Image (cartoon, rainbow, N blue to C red; front, top):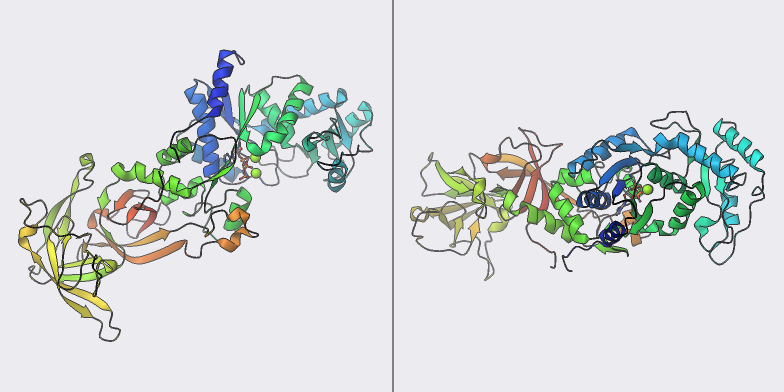
Length: 551
Ligand code: ATP
Ligand code: MG
Ligand code: MG
């Protein structure tokens, strides 16, 4: 794929600037419903809305679309604010709640009733669906459609006063039961719901539907470009109808394709199911595509913003390869992250010709490609650990790691040679290598005496720090879990592997939560912000080193 970002919405803005449609203003909003945690799809919308405002000298509001008290909660409001800020965006005091407009919306509904454009309907939800018809069959008018303005006003007032039970009546727009667009067949504007709202408490027992609340909220806030996802394209005529029927300021709704990522799901309902049924440890499980999950995993805001920029804005839905997101974090951390040594599956090595009790502090630069990161000392001694995978007793031809009689370089240290293999008498497993080192081959000593093909990472046994390392794989085994009958049936049983006896170099002792490193030859890692402590280090693998993104 091409990494050229494209943005058709910017073109619309350019055109509007030229024609002075909104007096040269650009004002967007990000309107999450506080009924779950934000995910990477929301990040796309955040980058788009805040990004377009910034780029065009405009403003962007953060607006909580809190019109359904049954599913919303303050916990989500707080998490959403935290995530938007962490991504690097600032609503700069422009924080709004759709619920702040409940009174205004009610008055607008009354205005529609008075204009003969809305009526109270006593059909049940099921009957309304039945009467609505289908794409090939026109709808039928509700028997309550021609109630008088007076009767509608009185009934709506009584709905508000709490006289009727949930579901017994609704307020509907009076539009066109024969419309080719099902959304225009007298859509519901208000429903009765006796539920406590997280902000307005029990003040209201009628709540506006999205299609009524959203255009009004946009209008009140003076939004110019109301950007939403593609599934609302069919709702745009209704968005326009509401504003025209009320005769109030009219923003432009613009739809773009929602982000889908391979090997994961993005709907809040499905993510909640994973959390509530214990398939993951929480919304912030490092395998989740949530912002807090990605943050905990070790992703940077820069990488996520770069990703959102690269995928661009399109008019048709597609699935983005998760390898592109992984590519973005590698690209961001390549120069930023210190490169350190961690042995995930340790194999003991004794250097027989190295004096017992001697310790050398070797100079080790943190990142050869970025000298600004400086260096640290790495202790070398007679007893070391290397990676189990880096030794084979009977290696194939092209194995450049350690084997009986073969030589490798230890990173930042010496060339060693494997002299003997010690096995567990009972199991036959290799438990220790006896090696020799060549004192003339110390790294950095010039000229280099000779070259060997393999370089291994290692730690000094007496100095290494124990750590737990968590390796993550895709949460699902299928590219598009949404296609499955039950998306949970393709959960990856190996999405988490916990290695509890890893050994890391001593410079990592006490690493602060959220510190990011490259573990040489393994990938990028981050101390887990929740579980890692000064005494018990826990590292999350953000991504392995190998880049599978096909440029
Ligand atoms: P979900 O289907 O996960 O519940 P939603 O659209 O109902 O998502 P909202 O809280 O209403 O969630 O979303 C806030 C904003 O983020 C909306 O403008 C919505 O269009 C946008 N958004 C949500 N999901 C995506 C996505 N996958 N890609 C791009 N934008 C998204
Ligand atoms: Mg929504
Ligand atoms: Mg939703």
